Length: 224
Length: 224
DNA sequence: TGATATTTTTAGATCAATCTAAAAGAGATA
DNA sequence: TATCTCTTTTAGATTGATCTAAAAATATCA
Image (cartoon, rainbow over all chains, first blue to last red; front, top):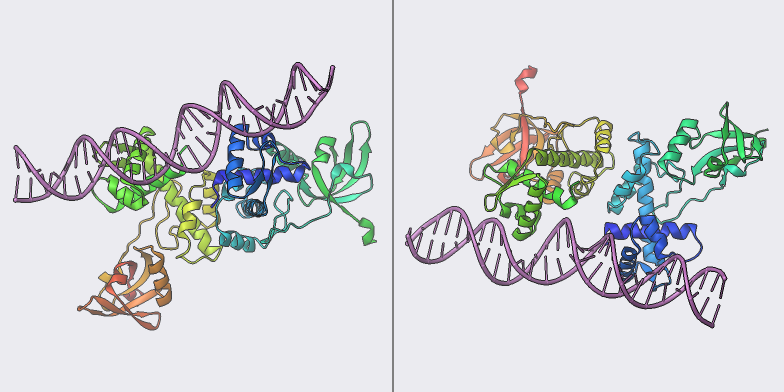
């Protein structure tokens, strides 16, 4: 069995490993989990003991196959609960993270697989992040940052890079929500902002926001 | 904030207090929670410190108003999750206890109130136990043990006294499930068993089973 | 390369929750 | 009332998870 704390470390290690090429360092984990480096070292020893990570003093850490499977199952649980909270209990996409963080530790494979079926085996969570299936496989999808589009391109919003409440509520306010379609009208070289048509309304999007939104380009010509 | 362990003690104290008239003893709690008397004493001191219980050495313990409110909210959460698991995720009434035991510790008033609405504000859980409403009030209901009925009486099964998996799966096998209606045909003084008509089928029910099933007598004459 | 800065680990404490074994208190009864 | 039994509490240890402060290892760069 794994404890809640151990699970949180595994998830953190997976998250860091996904975004960085080099080995996962003690300090990176302490930043991610908001704890001291000393606590991380302690925990890494325990996780190595349980063969959930490969760890060598001063050399950083990586997940073992078992550790990786466990971490991915946690991600699966987290994202499925988020879908439930948003689709059935009417929570906003900006409100579900902390709750899912608690729910993900409930340990029953049956529960999560029934929940998956109940929700219709969704492939993406409310933020557009892929949900691993029962075997830990993620659905890949062609996506690019909104910031990379050029005038004339049509696209559909499919995800976000940032997950902070501040960012998500801002997107809600502006109407830049998952699944909405847009057309890039103009890009301003001066500050790299974009003017877009968002389902009939014209909106200006700053570079900061555009970099944190993922879109799927739509080939409009195909309809002609 | 209360920890998981503290919450489990509060629930145990409430449960014991409900079924016994005298003060809740250390030993009764240690039996209920499957722990040692020494651990219970320790925890009671901590709970008294937090003013969740009134505790005097060697004198037993009782919940304070705050402790009681907290314990009842836990019961509310537990039973609502059971409804969710049975009605939406297709779990059997004999399979949901342990899962609900974990889910009940997830602390968000909003979550549980949304869940309550989502489920249609049920008044009873899958075992027929009343679900406290948002203010902690239970819905009372006229119910008697099946063992107390006499020949000729019609009744509907509304609850169970025992919650063990063994008992519940036995009831499933025999068809003695919540909401089914029955008519007492005969009682056998020798072993206090009953012969009943259960929706067309004749079934003999032992005293042991009949004492652990709650029914609501139906006034059949009212239909004439 | 060697001094300095940064990262990581160790040493030693603390806290919650638990245990066993021993001591103390309460209740029952001869 | 004195004694025996059962219950409850205390004393002392252990485990997981965390901390701070100090020591050790590694990285940087003049």
